Length: 238
Image (tube, rainbow, N blue to C red; front, side):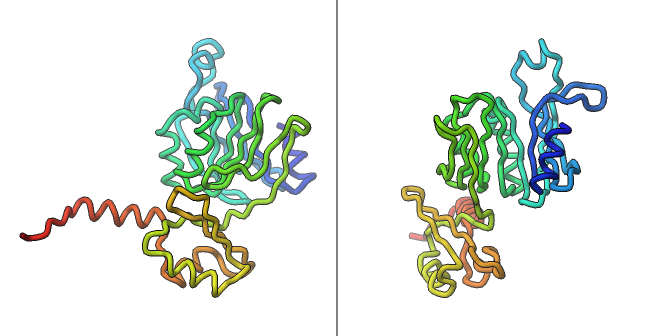
């Protein structure tokens, strides 16, 4: 813990440190978020322990999953076995994190694609096993940066000022925002999804401001509107 605090201060960085901690008289498997000033911004205690962690090691289940505000954005933390549980992902999804931070001894496979897409967030997977790739992913779950067989650490720059947008009803609006902002906006189409990632590259205009300016409907709002249509279940008169 002291080493991570010194590292955060020395590099003026936000650090997420995972390990077993004694809190309120009990042992918890935790992710602790440390500010560039060396202060604790928040602690996540693993909600879904492996059975042996609890019954043999005496580690206590955490019961909260709150997004932690940090200088780099709103962070949602998960630890290892957590990645298997939809209910934890749903808690984070409702809070709209900017970045998911996953500390683990196992990779999770396709879960590393599902989580970022459903939470509309970037994803950092930090692996405790050298043979598993530690990776940084965009909200589509696409790998942006990864460790390799030669290097066991990875550094990459990501822009968290982004939104996922469905193509329906937005084709002309996306064309208009690109024509207006040029290099100050990026529209990334991964193919197959029917959605794109719109990112503000501007230092003065956020992606939310761009979306409002051109009346672009973000993906979650479109899904809400589609569900409302289902509930109305319009039936034409014959």
